[in-house]
Amino acid sequence: MEADFERYYQRDIADLWRRRKNGKPKLTTRKAAILLCHLPRGAQVWLHAGGGMAVTEEVQEMYSLQHLIIMQSWAKAPKSKRGAKPKPREFPKPLFEEDEKRKRFERNAEAWRRKYGKPN
Image (cartoon, rainbow, N blue to C red; front, side):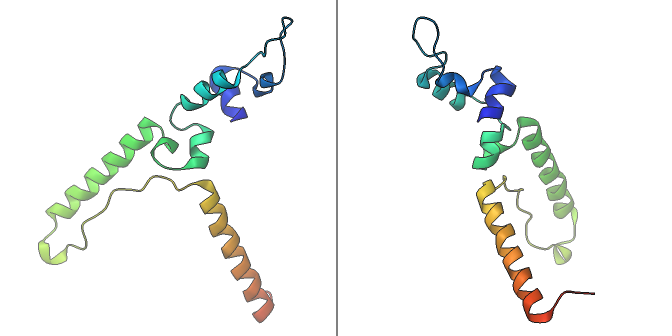
């Protein structure tokens, strides 16, 4: 969130705790919440959350174009040679799910190394 505030709004999130000379906060929690909710697609916050907001509109259009090309190729193929109907590309998963996947892979690799030794 801090990086997004700097990048898109040129605001320092630490202003939530800083005061003006009159005693009012430089950035209110209400204003921070509004700015957060209106971050553009592809912002780091949305990458961490995953889903449709994790990609920019341009990337989503590229996904759609790719799917259209694949569907056209699939439709032109003889029915006897067609596989399952292609599905559209999924939006990115939340980063914590990817971290869990990576950690599970590393645990499995470590278990394999303990059992069989390091590869040459």
